[in-house]
Image (tube, rainbow, N blue to C red; front, side, top):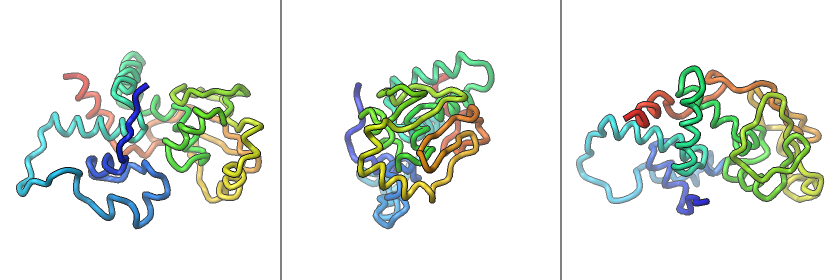
Length: 208
């Protein structure tokens, strides 16, 4: 499967805001958005007015880059959101939040979604007692996420036990900080998620 291999800080600069793609580094003076607030590439002396289509594309790219997805995968998830009852934009946001790599990030097991995706792909994570290496699988209410027994001996896990106390967890998740076991208490709603993009605008983009 294809993946983005260029500097992720360029994605934040292109969107015009921090997408927290590098975790805690984004909160330090090393953040490219703080050092270079301008979009990448050659700068025009006179800014062009962004069209409605351009604004829709920007919102879609912002959502896709935030969750680290390629276009084809994102489009398939949008189609799934369309098939569900309710508001498509809200359905899309909930489906994005239910991805396993995002849940790992929300539980505080990783500093960024890309790091969470790597943890899953390397087989460190157990979902309902079974090892899984698919970051895109969707969690359900009542699902339990914990670490593989062999992974609890790693240096990363030991450091995580010390730093997990300072991390907060969203209301739709619970976390046993001593054993690093997370559980999905309920499916997230749009009110539970602080989204940096407009789901309605993404729907408008794909509706044309």
